[in-house]
Length: 319
Ligand SMILES: [Zn+2]
Image (cartoon, rainbow, N blue to C red; front, side, top):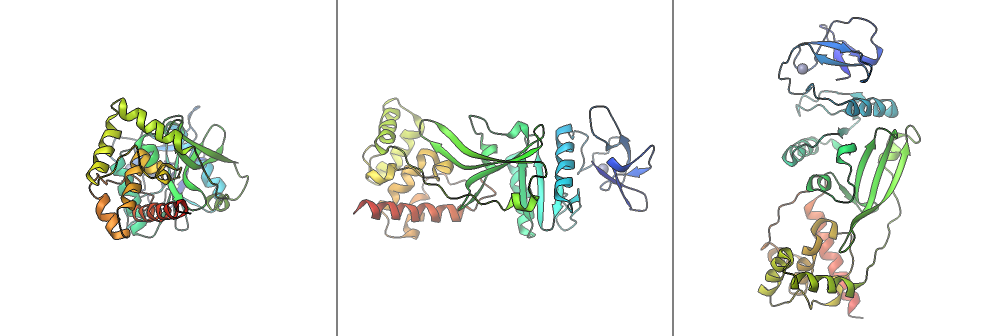
C-alpha cells in the first residue's frame, strides 16, 4: 500500500516519509512498516500476517509504480480511498471514477463482482490492465472481459504500460475469420494530456469490410474438417431450416460484433431472417448458451445493436 495512517487516523504517504514512522493499515488497523528497498518504491507492508482483506503483501512493483504514476497524473485523485458503502478500495478515486489497475490475473467472477458493485453505487469503474494481462496475438476470456464498448471507440481495452510510462488504448478491436484479433493503438506518454482527457478520448468511427465469399469459404472448409464449433452452429441453424453454408450473402459480412460472438454471429444473423421482430428474435436465439462474459459491456445494448445492424444489412442487400 502507498498510504497508511497514524493511530489518530491521519494519512501517511509512503513517498513523503523520512526515517521511522509509526503507522497502521487503514483497513485492518494492524501495524505496518515502511519499506524503502532498492527495487521497490517506498510502500507500507504489514509487520505480521493479518489476513487483511484489502492489502495483500503480494503487491507487485509494477502495481505500486502504476498507482503512483496515475496519482501524479491525475493531480487530484485519492489514493486507495475506502468506500464504506461498497466495502471496496479502488487504487485511485477521481470523483466518481474508480480506477483499478490489474497487473495479475484475477477470476472472472471477482471482476464481475467488483464491477457490479461500483456500478450499483454509481461509480464508473476504469479498469486498466498491466503487462501480464496485455493481449498479444491471442485474447483470453479474461482479457476480453476487461474490454469496453462505445459507438466511437468500438470494442476497446485500456492498458497501462509501466516501463514506457504510458497509457495505451487498444480500440476498434476486431475479430477476423483468418487473422484473429487486431486493433488500433493510441498511446499517451506520462502527463502528455490531462487524465480526464485521456479517459474521454473519442476517435472517428471506422468502417470495416472483408471479402464475404472468403468468409463463406472458410466456414465450408471448417465444416468439412469436422470443426466442432461450426458443427454446433450448423445444428442450431438446421433446426430453423437453414444451412450455415448457404445463408443470405449479407450474413457473412464483416462487423465489429464478431468480437463478442465470433462465428456464432452467423446464427444470430440467420435468426433475424426467420423472426418478425426483435422480441421474436430474442426468443429464437435463447436456444444457445447465452452466458455473457463482458461485465463492462451491456449485453442488452449489444444484442439490440446486432439486431439493428442485421436488419440494416438485410434491407441494404434487397436493393
Ligand atoms: Zn491491513
